Structure formats: C-alpha cells, structure tokens
Length: 440
Image (cartoon, rainbow, N blue to C red):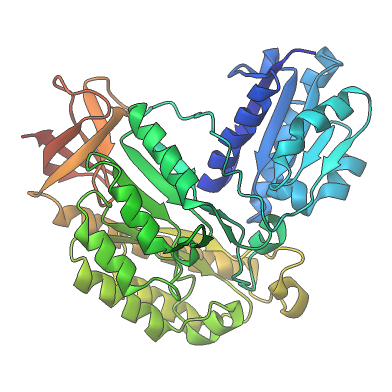
C-alpha cells in the first residue's frame, strides 16, 4: 500500500484544523500527505453534518471516487469527522467503498485503524471523549498562503440549540491547556505566520482551571495578542448569551486583535428564539450589539440567520428582517432550516414550514443582506485601512489581496509588496464583495 494520504475537508474552520491534526498523526506513522488523489494509498474525507446538503455532497463524492477502488484494490477510504459520528452504521453497512469510520475524538487511533483495514476488516472508532483536545499535537499546516492559520482552543459544545447536531457529533465542551495554545501560536509566528484565528464552537465559554491558573477567554485572547504586536488575532464563534464586556474591552485595548465579531442571531423573533433554545431574547441580542458598537466603534459585525424554522410565521420572518436591518451586518451566512435527525427539533417539533415558503423567505433575506453589505462597503470609500497581504488577487497577478482588521477583502496594485506584509490602503471604490484601493 502506498504510504501517501490524500485528505479532503468539508464544512467549518474546525474541520480544517482537525485535518491538520490528522495529517500530523499520520505523518508520525510514516504517511506523507499528497495533493494528488490518484497516487494516494489512503483517502480520508473529513465531513460535516450541520445540514443535509452537506452530507449529500459526501455521498456524491464517494460515488465520484469509486473508480479509484477499481484501479487499486489496496486503496483504503476513510470517512472521518461529524458525519462519521452520526452515520457510523450506515457508512459501514451500506457503502462498500468505506473501509474506515472515525469520529472527531478518535484521530489518535487512525494508524491502528488503517492497519486493521489493511488486514481486511472494517475499522471503526466513534467514541466521544470528555478529555481529548489534541493539545500535545503540532498540526501539519495545510494552508497554502503561509500567512494565516487556525488554532483550536476547545472542542465540543454544551449549548443544546434545538436545531443543532454539533453536541451529538462533537461531544461535551472542554477547553485546551493555554500553555499549549500559546506554544502553537508562538511557533506559527516564528514560521512567518502573521494571523491566527482561535477556534471554538463557543469561544466565549473557554475556561481553564489547573496548575494554579484560572483563565477565561478574554484572558487567553490577551495573552495571544501579547505574543507579538505584528501578529493579528481573530476568533470564532461567539455566543450572544456569553459575550462579555470584559472581552469587548480586551479587543478595544489591543490594536492587533481584529475588530470583527461573528455573532450568530439565527432569528429576530422571540418565540422562535425560545423554541430554538438559544437562551437569549431579541432584546438581549440587541443589547450585546449595542455594547459592541459603544466599546469598539470601528468593529464590523457578521451573523448567521436561519429561515423557516418550525412554526415560523410571516410575522416571525419580518422580525428577522427587521433585526438584520437594525444590526446593519457587514456580512451574513443565511440558510433554510434543515431538520437534523436526533436533535430536539427533530424529536419534538414538526418541520411545518413548506419548502417553497422557506425558499422565498431565504431569497428575501439574501436580497436584504446584499443591500446592507453594499451600503457597508460604500461607507469605506475614502477611508484608509491596514491590510495584511495574503497573496495575489484571484483575477489578476498585478493585484494583491488581503483583509482589513474588520475582515473585509481588499485588492490593490501589487507594487513591491510581499505576502505577509502590512500595507496601508486608501479605498477608492468597491464591488458587492470587495474593496478596491491603492497603497499609500
């Protein structure tokens, strides 16, 4: 069997970070990562279960690569991550292509499971852990730009939102040792990285108690920011019920903590928020947004919205639209509700909003957000932003691309600037997705 591993990653930033841990574990066992799927002896697909269409993409991908099994009888294919956790029996029983099924907390066992698969057996480990954080493993960076990277600070989730499958596939919340986080961040900076994003299902609930150290998320964020003033620090995702004034003041105090917060609202209707078990009200959400605007005036905001959740009426939908208009979000991820088996909503509520109404409401939501986003970008014309160069623009080798502290994409003539440099850019115009300017 070829000792080359090819890994495909679907879903959230946490899965990207997990894939880097997996490659590190397999590298220790003698595997070499490859970008060429045809030369791999082991193919791993890191999966997402957040919505049904995410899982359908994986089934489609398995069909698409089935010819490789016919060409190489020794090839092993593994499904890892959230879909492996949720559909373990189905993957093993119904799909002859899949040899290995591994959940998010069992990646250390991968070398043994691959060996088991090589001996002709199906290999499965989907046990969830209350301790595993992979804190001692140095991830093998898979990103191409060498400028920005993800650092996982915690795993799992204790928020039992009615629609969400994450607690069932990623287990209970546990935080990672801050010493290991800081060590990883310092190593990244030493290797030329200039931006890290601290990841957690709910970063605000990060908490470490041990070795005479009690640390909350705002403490950890400050320590990471102090690694070097040339290191930009981002984080994702915050929860409206937990984001504190202490955290906001920490962000305001440090220039290198990026002035962008992703704060999922999901709905603007109190009855729907209660049914979703989000643990805050519309008014509570608005109070937190107002606090952000007051303490960090230059902060940009993005959000998540779900339309068509169980029992949602036209009035509930209008409440969501009005919250979006009030919030003036710079960007939003918007989705139709997708029932996930095993969740509280699937067990107790009827998915009673017709698909055509879900689609119509989503279209209305997207249309509104496009207008809000365009307005947000037009406000930036004439302003100067510090941009961290990430590489060349997708459309032209004569332009560089990077992001502002507010997480807005900027393109500008390349000049003599290099990847990883900070450049002051005067914004001259914009498209619906991008700010365009010149260096000053």
